[in-house]
Length: 420
Image (tube, rainbow, N blue to C red; front, side, top):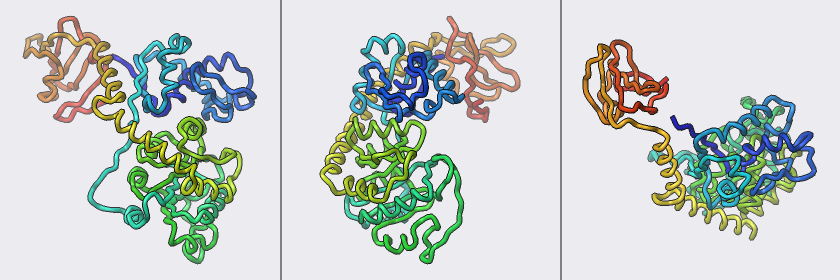
């Protein structure tokens, strides 16, 4: 059976991951202590401080697993990437044409993105959307750090003052602060403040910003918000799903990376795509002061620089739509992958369903043809394995030349057999 790996982030990250075993042999000491950029053939070099989390400590077990993953990826039959050629032309071209990469990655690379969640319309409107409906176009900055991203109490205070000083409209999805890692999943419920403001906000913050901002505890429908015409900016942790949702919504960003490959993504969004601004120092290294936050918000929402970023991201949005449309490059790339699957899966010309006593029951051109008729009695068996489910008296299916379709993969039948 053909085996493909889907990398749900950038081609640049994929290049770093696959090339990491080479860097492991060439570089001594910790990557973060290197003075020079980490060179990747045909790709944008990586700043040592931007390496993904598993590369931060070469003595950690996670690093060895990451290197092992880099060695294993080229062993698959193909690589699917959640990106597209207009977004990452340099890295994708390197995979195809660079001689070093051609010697490492000898399998097809399929850019099939952007794969993302779609806006779900159920006819009802949340309070957040109703609030947005009453705001001017592109006037609101949306602040959210993903499902796991959390800030310290000090940083939440500075962010609150920064948003207030900017005098810009905002929606802020807030989680209580953490004193641990940036991806802690800690949800206390303690509240304080005479106006009902949570204890981790400055006193009176809710009263002072009540006409401009909306604070949402824990979660909001991000895709729906980013596709609303009133949203003009997104302060994000730069997870790739969130980044794609922002691009596909035509919304420029304030890049606020916290963990995983987000530092790499932030650099890509700012320096390569020109659709984001970011703090001068990584937020994980130093608390970002309110004055800098005010400056970034104003730059994104009011300045010429922000206008240019908005123009850039709208071009990317259009390219995403074109690439995914029927006949577009990403659509065609997925079609090529499916053709590649067909060359790897050898299907027999005809299969014969047999009962356990060896008697022929029926002949079919493809075992999938009888899927709708399966009961607990039916088992499809190819030369190398089986498909289906059987409890009592399984018939067998044999085919001329055998089949690689079925290798130890079980699929459900309409009478209740389950995938395992």
